[in-house]
Image: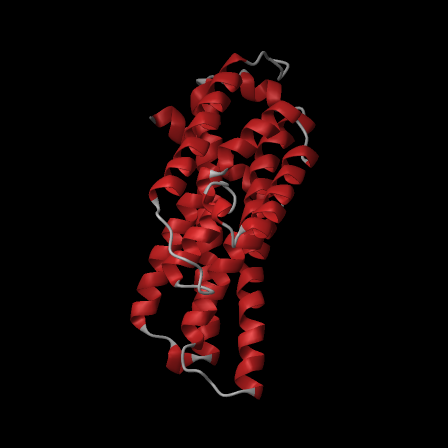
Length: 254
């Protein structure tokens, strides 16, 4: 356990010298602004509906899941893996006096921490912006509800990460996993209104979110199938990543 904690601390320390901090900030701010500006224009030129606070939170987390989250978290995941190859530190990592299972799991845990920071920083920004502009429509029950939605968002987005890590380990470059994530987002957006959306892993988080928040009048769904798919898409690539990383030689290849 102490070994894992030490590796985790070392991986977190690497973030201070990386662009990940700026990527997280971009990912936290952008969905809030995409939700805020249309609401602000509507409040200025049309009648105030009284539920702008709810709509701000709903829009922010929707944009985060549908557009920003997948490519952003994929980029963070890819960076944490691929940079070990491109900087030549992969050999040092593989000869580190620690089990390789703990090394790869620590990297995955750091990615989860980054997801938590991004999602809840975005939520905090939405709260501040909402209180400054739509104070009368911000109610405590909405804050509690969307706090829970943020937790669900973190878990669903994290479930998609092992696939990206597996692609990153195999390709050893940023282009392939990043291109894959962008293609997945585009396809997810195209099928979002169709029944197929609950079977495609990269559309499932948004589709579940829309159902939980009654967004856009989408039909209700049975959560069992999409959740089962997310569990499978998490554990199968995770087992592969641990196995493959554990079998790599000191030159970073299988």
